[in-house]
Length: 421
Image (cartoon, rainbow, N blue to C red; front, top):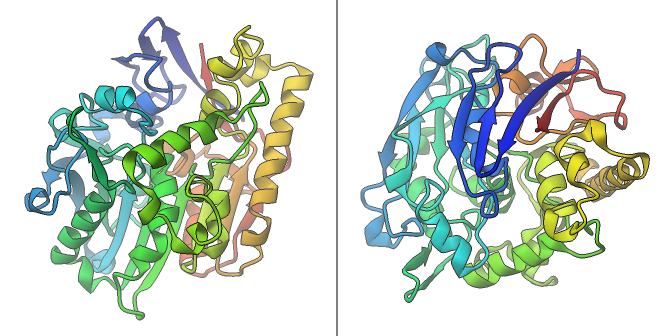
């Protein structure tokens, strides 16, 4: 049965309605012009399908020696992560999850961001719930529940790639240094002894996973089994509904402002411009480490912020459709089918490699590994009767090859669509 997560929108306020399976309502004030609806609420979405009093809460660890390396958040505060130790058969296995949350592409948006948890550890939650792929319960996370599981917080605004500063605006763009300092700290806490490791992330963290995947592999000896999982990170260089390039323009600001060019994979920047090398479609084929791409074919964030943002839709023709796919007209659905075709073309070469994995489901969704209801539950989304958690586990442990591509919308009735109202 198809599931829906309703997201109520008021002016400057978002209230999550009760989830059909007991998701507790959540509200949070935010400036809609600064943050997309989804970016502002990734954390609360992860509670879906989980009882609030049954959550594993994991404390924040600040990386104390990071400042000496210049590895700081946008406002100069220390970066941090949440670590829950593994045990038993998972004691020497490590899962690193890179937090998502969009990007800042100019001084104004970065100055705004540095006063939020996306730009300063002063505003980060002191503890966060570990759900989905981070859960410590075998019935919620069958393959990784007893691993060492880490959530690396995202406070640089450039998918852990920048390395520059703006002294006038008092902004530090140090994502690459944060990545390096965090990895060094975790290696010292036992990750250097890992027999198995996986780098994952969702949204901007999913893009960061693709960018840093081979770097992550290089931290370990050849005997360590290392793979990467990108969830909702396949941001396409797509044309928006006005014929413009909204996301390319955004990325141009991110890469230029934050000095990311020198930290993007050289195999790409040797023959393409740096902005093109921030788009995963130009990176995935050259990633040497086994990589799994999980993405909704009708990615909610990309529909809202790349394909049909208000800036590309001044007359509001797409307003209803961008909030609720059920209100899209026939021509609008055709446009979105074109986006899906673009996505399938972007992964064609990548999918030929036996070591890579794919799960592209025809849902209006975004980030499916960190929400319990979409990762692994009785009514999770499936392709050919296989849930996402089982598909990822089969691929990681080489139990089966996984190249799962859904039929086009509206054929999949197991989706957990995101709907805004």
